[in-house]
Length: 261
Image (cartoon, rainbow, N blue to C red; front, side, top):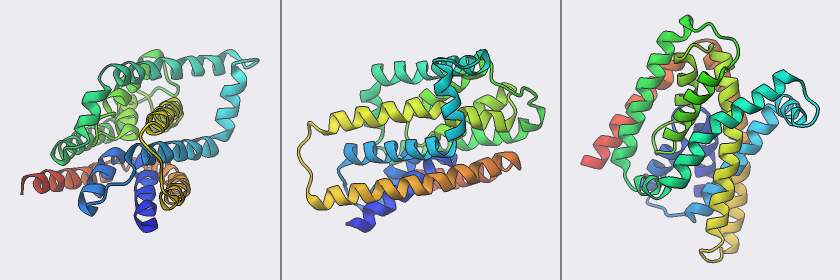
């Protein structure tokens, strides 16, 4: 059983930040394995583990933004305000249509279709990357990326993929878009992890094996998340989003075919 936990932790850690949809891959991995782990607890653990990965990787930026709340400069406070603005859509959607979103996780076919949507968004951003000229996010960028993050609650829609694409498609250069996307993920991952953890505590106790498995999955998710952040930043800098678009297109087509046949 530890192997299954480790595999799902690896899937979450890599795909949370690589633009290929972590939720979609978790749905497909569990469907293919025919295994039903303690779902909400697992999701809480791996979300919080990938949150740790973001904070560790961007520790300098996070510390600067944290200080901005007390004695930081106007530029840092503005950035914090933009993150708050970008977080509003996912909060509203999460609180109003969460039940419908959770039902979507039972559909591999829908997951495959949403992977195709992710592929289209990435391909469009890859084509427009050279035309983007803005070097720092504006309220318009923050709102568009926040709306994209809300859509990414659906399995198969990559949070990192569609938020970075939204930033690029509204004129923000690739690296600033990627950096804002990662920092924007912090409140979303924290909220998702705490919500799932609070919900999971009302659904019975865990065995010792499951507890050790969850801890193992968390460590694997954090370490693989650090690797994934580095890989995505390299891909964004070199304008290689189209390779992830191709992967999403292939995975999405395979998932749709799997659900049909």
